[in-house]
Length: 239
Image (cartoon, rainbow, N blue to C red; front, side, top):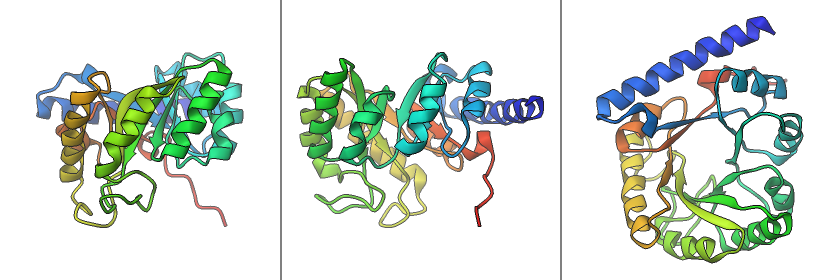
């Protein structure tokens, strides 16, 4: 366990240096960017180590892995983010532990989240996932609503009991006009965030950037970056 702690501490320090350098280059304060460590596929013991190293935000993308892990870590001062595509039959479970759902992309999901948040007497933060590879009214290959659908969906979240509209999220697209142009994609997301805040001033969270492209996200203005492999390492493929 000591060896794993040393490994995670070293990786975390390198990521911290990258974020700090990116903030300095962009003329931003380090505290303007929150690190979310994506702990998917890694055990609760790693989450516990990370918490001891000062990590306060963790993210998961599959409920079947996240639910038991969150239950094992109830005593830790963590904010849990759900970042995967979310099916409505998993909403009740996810609402039980997730403080924020970053992958809200359709009206039916908003309704399900609201129902379960009210039932659980919780307030769940929501980010609209934006698909920059989608047609104007379509969904993206990896989930997300097209830019043209943000306003309508944001209004639904803002009006839904038990939910709080926190902002926008995107994943750098693999196809379409922004493929291979991460900085441009994240700048587009910032423009969409500016538009959103005209109607919903408090929805100022912008989640963008991962291990490979966090610098571009920070340069564009992201408030949160989601980093997995750069902190936890690349998990060996099974089989």
